[in-house]
Structures are given as structure tokens and as C-alpha cells.
Length: 520
Image 1 (cartoon, helix red, strand yellow):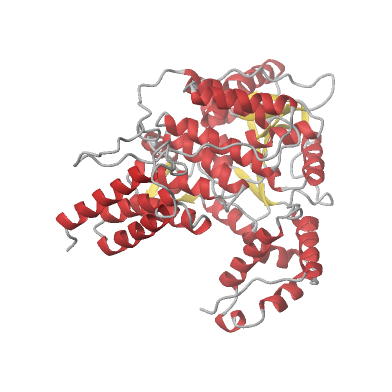
Image 2 (cartoon, rainbow, N blue to C red):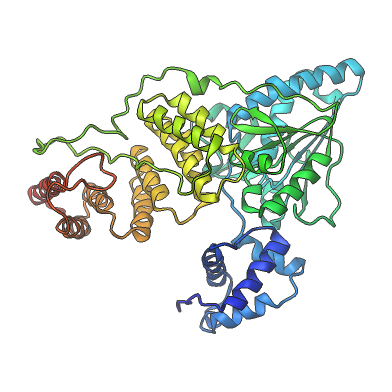
């Protein structure tokens, strides 16, 4: 397949940045234009024929920049800007919070007044997992009286392909998380390797195509009791995000709530809005004297319960100079991170508290500080990314891999070219026993940071475990070459104090093990 080299004049690039912002709300200005080019390059590779790929990529970009971005063209472009990472009951503590602190009281008031109706909107619903999760939760809350209630549940997305999949209600294993066998049996029927939503819940959600930033489109649901719009505003420019927030809040009734993701709490603050925590999400009420008052945030039990798991897997002790066989070398630690820009005031205080709490293994305190940090106005995407990485690290240190993966995905959504994020992803995959996924993530980390010494050693270990001796030897050679550029007592970056001499001894041990157990 011919390789397309992304190149673009400043004028053409500015036209593309403007078009994307105008029609999709996404902000690729201020140094992010190269990310836009990468996205468009991948789109061209996926959608163009081999003959078209051989054509001048700049010519394709020029045609795109000056075309009329009508509905048909937008649908061809949307896959380059849509994130399909979601699953059922994502942020489960938020769903628990909704049931206990918002919907239960609302249902009681409606029963008392004789108004047995609810209106809910899942905005940017992707492939429908969030909307179905809401429907399942409501049926559980209503129980035997569900038939006497009128539920209007709307789910919208700009991506027509996502909506088509949502209407089908068929999902693979990636839409679920572990320990959900009972959940699947209740709400889904098996169809080969997939699960389809059972007939009792199909056809009860109205899926519609809707562009959140198009203020000319009529709102798909007015007078709503609940709107979920999570993990989408963080891609918009501040002006676009503020405008969308105001329209969403305008769609609520006086008792309604708007839920954003934790990452988007700072966007609300920057827009002059004040909310409160709802589980690990952020809740906003409609402005006005009759506005609902969300409960003051209390950390859920998962944040504070003592956990029996050791930290050793992701925070190993400093290895000795002499490593005794046959004990394997420790899994490398997650690198520390820090905000690149300085904000001052509350943001710096929250960040300092989080760092201090993490260094003392006070994980609930660290997470509370990081969530507070994310509410601060003016955070850059990189600062939000670093906070999400630390939240992922805090869960990983306590062996809560699902929570760690969830925050890691948020970090990657904010900064898709983060070597640190892929490094953590490799470690989590290795811990979960998924060596192919670990190697894939590690390959991405090394592509982004080709001088990552510890990454090559980790890669060599994984390849050796798969019996791929030749590839393992190659990774070890690169690792040793990089080590040779430093003095023996120099600490290896991101290796928790391990010196170059110590890592070199580990390399030699791995080579000896390979010689004693040659691959077939």
C-alpha cells in the first residue's frame, strides 16, 4: 500500500483547522495541527482506494479544505474524530449515585404528585451502551410499577454508523467488564460470540442523529430530568464547550441534572458554572432559584475501603545489584508525572496534595485531590491528561485494573500520542495476562519514545516469554546500546532508582536464560 506523507501549507492547514472547528467543534489550534493531519491521513488510508492513495495527499487536503461540508461529507469525516471507547455501566459508581441520590427522590416526588413520567437524554451516546445502561437502571428502580410510568429516553450521536449499531443492540465482549455474567444473562441473549439486548428492552430508546455544536438543530429533548454528556466536551474549544453547556442546561427542567465526566469539571468551572461530584462524574443543575441541589460529594466506598493487595507488582522494591536466578525481574514501575504548565492557586495545591498522598500510598486522599484538580478552570489538555494518568496509577497500585484502564483510556483520549500512557497500558495488559496486548502497547510507547531504555528490556522479557528468542535478542541489544551511553551508576529513567549497571546485569541474566532454554 503506498505511503501517504502528510504535508500541508500553513494556509491550507489553517483552513482545515477552521473547518473542523466550525462543523465539529474540535479545537486543533495552538500546536495541535499535526494531530489533525495524522487523523486525516489515517482516514485517507482507510477510505480511499489504492489508486487514490497514490495521488497527491496535499491535493486531497486542498479539495477537503475548500469543499462544502454538507451532511454527507461530515459523515465520511466523522470516523476520524469519533471515539468509540465505551462499555456498559461505565463509571458504575456514578450510576449508583444517580439511583440513590437523584432518581429515587425524583420518582418519589413524581408518585406523590401523580406525574408518572421521566425524560432522559444520553448525548453523544456512541454505540448505545450508556443509554441501555440507563434503561436497565430505571427498570430496576421502578420494579413492578414500570408499566404505569412513561419513560422517554433519547440517545443522540453525530456518527450515523454508531447509531445503527446501537439500534441493533448487538455487542461484543469489549462492551462488558469482568464479573458481569449475571448482568449479561438478565439483559442479553447470546448470539454466537456476541450478545443482543433482550426484546423487553429493544425499541424503547429513540436513537437520533444530532450534532451538539449545531445551534440551528432543534434540541432532541426538552424539559429533561437527566442529561448525560460525558467525555465529549473535552474535545471542543472553550467557546464551543461553553455554548453547548448552556444549551444542555437550557434543556433541563427545574429538577433536572446534567452529568459530565470528571475531566470536564474544569470546563464547567471555566464557563462560570458550579456543580458537585456525582460518584466520579460532575453534576450541574439548571440555574435558577428552583434548581435541584445535588448532594455534596462523598467518596464512594470503592475509594476508601482498605484493600488487601500489595503494591509490589507496579511499585517494586529497588533491585539488588546481584539478581538471584530463577526469580524474574520486577514489573517496571509507572513513571511519575507532573503538570507541564503552572496554574498557581487551587490547582497547584490540589496537585501537591495528590503527589504527597501518592508518595505515602494514601490513595483515596490522592484521588480526591486529583478530582478536585480536574475541577480547576484553565487546565490544558496535557494537564488533564497527566491527572488522568495519576488516577490510573492510583488504581493500578491497588490492583484495581478495570478502574485503572478506564482512567487510562481517558488519558489517551486527551493525548493519543502519550508514550507514558502506552507504557502504563503495557504494564496493565501484562498484569492481566494479555501478552499480545502488552507487546502492542509497548511497541507504541517505543515508537513515541525510541530512547526508552526500560521499555526495550520489558519488551525483551515479553518476547522471551513467548519463545521469540531472535526478537528478544534484538530488543536486548538496543537496550544494551542505550545503556552503554551512560555511566554505570546513572539511574535508569523511570526505573525507580535502578542503575544502568543493575539493569545491565538483568540483561545478561535474561541472555543466559535464553541460552539455557533455546527457542524451538
